[in-house]
Length: 234
Ligand code: SAH
Image (tube, rainbow, N blue to C red; front, side, top):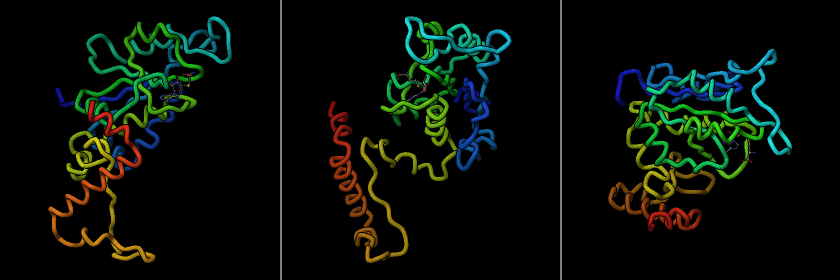
């Protein structure tokens, strides 16, 4: 981190009351209260037009739904970050590049992030180029707004901030960090409803345990997400 102000997240939304929401609880909430990161939810409607503070209009060329206006959104973005603000500006969007653990780590390693939440049919295309927004998706399905996608993105980042997770190691062994899915976990009791913990995990043989876990990771990844293995070969 380049300064002492902590990791800064600014979210532009039509529903600021949704924040911090779940991010105010557990790990991310405790980190927020400690000042490891800050979150400000900025109401796009502050820059709405006219008596009704209108933020959207009908799509050029016709079709259903409404589109967030470029001028309104740009004014909100300019109010939140000026030219000296070097944080990446993300636009949550199903058309974006899918969020990955590597991207979350890169974001967490930076100064923070500015996230624009779309609503309705989306945003006027011109503001994406005009304010250099990077479209980021959280998966191949359509949400009704970008807020939950922003929370997903922030949660993935915040848990990686220094000091947020109890054991630093629990960050590096997890699914995706190694390019593989994680091995199975067990805890007491030793036997539950006729199902036993695999003997090897109780053997005390750490090398054998590490080998077993690696094999299980590979097996699960091959079974469930062969695409992850293909990606590694590239
Ligand atoms: N008409 C658009 C979908 C709009 S959904 C399309 O077909 O691509 C409304 C808003 O929800 C979007 O502007 C975006 O901010 C958010 N959103 C929906 N699905 C998302 C996803 N999978 N990832 C990230 N944001 C999403």
